[in-house]
Image (cartoon, rainbow, N blue to C red; front, side, top):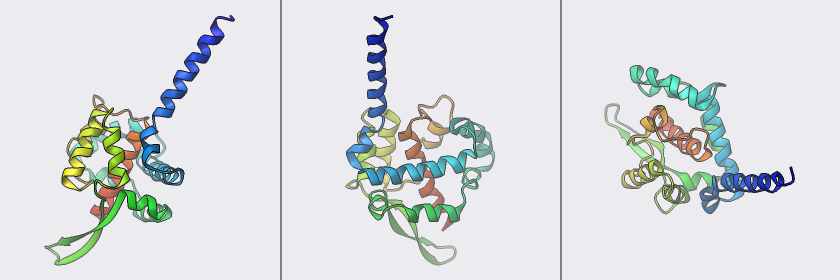
Length: 193
């Protein structure tokens, strides 16, 4: 019994270190208040999209619906007024590290309007993605495409990664959930303006 106690503490320490590393990249780029804001955004999106179910199971169940009806079916789960409120509730410094407003033109209706778009590679969200991409290959691809296009709404293989059971995403990892949340909030804003 006494020999098992040191083994237990070693395992507990290793597990704690692994959990700590899970957001170490985030902590390298955001302060505590900003991380709290990012958690608030992520919790909002995961709750809205999952509708009380497990996040991964909810996305896997949506796969066929999205294939038949397009991504808009996923976005109908998010209340646009609530989204605007949650974005307004975060600190300006958090918002500025992720987003800016881009002027967009709808030629069919001959109007201009502003939508959320990614702030550039000199801002902390993209720096965080590039650092995280050093250990997670699909995030590296996502970060490179984001930097090249400047638009969080660009698709690359995003939907495959999140909706495919064979995809590389660990749906319980906060980093994966955060990337999903920021992507969805941005895309939803672009589609609703």
